[in-house]
Length: 387
Image (tube, rainbow, N blue to C red; front, top):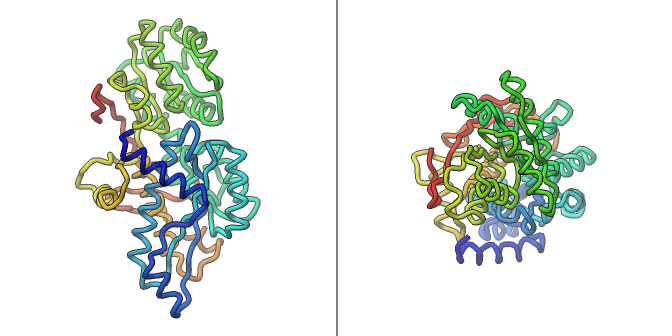
């Protein structure tokens, strides 16, 4: 992370920990004081601004703020505005649950938005269900939240099963039949393992030759990796944060492993590159949004223009947060100023093929999604994204 980004993250975290709202233009606020009856829609977000997933959470949160600000500028004369309240949960499900109650209670949020992390997303979904509210655009949520029993949860990113299918199909395409799995021993790692096993079953491929779920602390990592390596896998699928992922890759390479590494998008390219440096060369990572590099894709151009007018640095997670907030803004706009939870839910359910700017998403609750695209990219030793 460069110095300017560190400085910005520090400033952002300091502001966000206060639970402040973001996105209401001064001109709009001034206008509403002189008359009119605005509809301010409050989005309540619990996100890791500290802890093991802080860089991912901060980037996702920052991209969300850019889109909220853009929505409010575009709708300054319509009387419809978004207000984003972001609370830090440190990547802890208990804190995410408490934040969800605070956001829907004392903060009077209209819906929950953009919870980051598998366990945290489940905690937010549970609170939203209990209180008759919605959870929109959880990041890295378990596929269990995509079933019919969760009609109030709306996903902008593809499911873990979608990423798993892309990854294991690629392994099969290049003749890698001996595949192993390494992940964090937490809700995310277990959900990733279930998705990989399901994908292998559906594609009728050879079962995993080895599985390692690594407990927090890292004292068992060496022994577990040795067990994996003894099975001579041709490829290892990783579902873990950057710390476990980087440690596993370094240790395996040092011990002589020459096979491929395939990581889920939730690892985060920026934090992984910060951990590995030039050792990141050759690792394949799935991505669920377009590359945040200059391109002809309208949503990417829009995001980069917003980044250029901010203190932020472009990233995959930032772009995903931008897309998520833009999508929720469109749902609110379609539902109209007089919406309630039920009408907003119906509006979101009907958005089955929304073009967010050259990138299509499907908000319909459900496990499978053939609308959203997933890319497999590799990283060069100098950090360049390759396809």
